Length: 497
Image 1 (cartoon, rainbow, N blue to C red):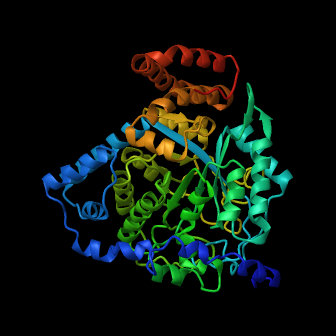
Image 2 (image 1 turned 30 degrees about the vertical axis):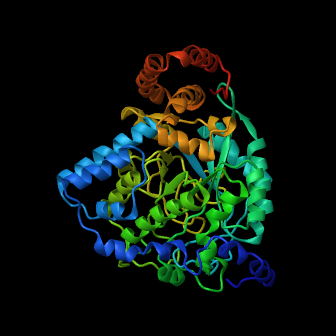
Image 3 (image 1 turned 90 degrees about the horizontal axis):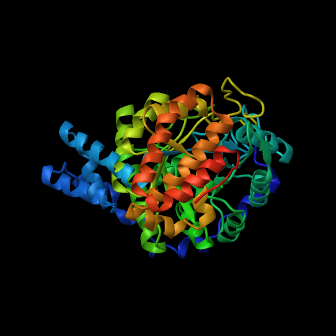
């Protein structure tokens, strides 16, 4: 599909070179300066004493260096790997308690001016059925997400195209936040929208921030510049490696509270990408004083008309994928970790023990897929194929059986616990205490409004255990919490501490 003439004019105005160079140290970007190939070449498996020292840093919620992270990549000893897994879970519980946050992806359009070699939304994919949701169609999606399934958080996903530019993003966010729908016992709404979107200028990012988003996500796809250039044609916006690499610097400068990064594992050597993610969050901390709120690790999966063949040399095995998750938890111990329904249920369930904190469910990634009740996955409408099609009710029941409470809490955004504030609380291991209270309140609300009888039965022991812990460990907050809890059970909604 050819790029329309007016799109070429639009594309020519997107990249602002001054908003790249201002963050760079001379001519070298921070990935080049990190010298990742050399660190991987020199890395050796740590002996027992060094490994315990590295893991002690993780458990103290201190970032690992690139050299320490590279050393963990080299670990093969089964006992050492078991110690790493044990520490990763301890880190997760220390920082985030036994909570899992759930969300839904919402794709608002699949028009795109880019031509990524691996993506079903590529402009060159003439088989894709293109659409951008209008306000009425968007409301129908939210009616299902907030009124039938019970989601409170979304990741809204936008392509790079004039039809879903910054003004469309702002308008769609306003539509989402304003919409309310009746539920079984109350009123449902989306309380927080995270945004996965292209890189923008500081000026445009300020507009998106003012719309009240949660986390702003942009994934680098691959930190390996030669591979990046191979996958993204130079004449496209996405072909500019540095514009994308420095977008989180611009986001934090614009006033965004929280940012999320990620790599598409499978485009290049996963070891390089893993160190790239760690280098990225360290660069943000060094230059802007705040690291990444979340790290995502999507794995390359088939897409319509993708050039990635089954014999592509960098595809990531299940074992290596689990190692990636494990090492990220240890290397960036404070960060939230998102595993999406790209992965099969068994992989996602196994990742719980390695420290993931967020999962989606009841996910539809076709444009308009929630309201249209798309059951069979349609390659012409989707960016990729999902691996886990569990409903939110099913996932919550499975999590409860493993002792996890599902949190729908968005209180931090309303109470100012965002940005550097929440990062400091996470590093101190105290944010989990705030969130335990609100996790119980929001979980009870969801159970009353949406859960099946089977899921309510499965969740009851978890709820009772959480309430006992609140009473024992937070006696000063218990009386106020209990009052809010009874109000929730009596039908009030969106109460938080």
